Length: 127
Figure: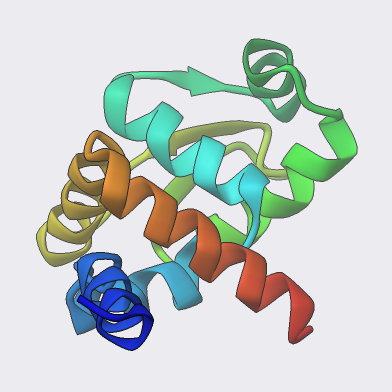
């Protein structure tokens, strides 16, 4: 195998995400904070909390978490309770929950996780 063939095999190996997952990442998981939030609410489906509480659990700044929570709420992945959006929780339509599940399953596979990471880094450099 020459070097060129090796590059093609390498590129093919890391192109394992389907178009629907690529689209989900672009729309919902365009930052590492949102990555953390989507995974947190998926694995802790009954979790409810204020931005301060969720930030503490994720080891993030409250301001950063609050902005990401508000964005995920606007996009329908999360819901909130209270006038000022005090308590956030995971309540998405079934089709969106399926996409979240696909995303989190992909994170459990090393090659797919690396592809997601590379995609997220590319998104960050183009903004």
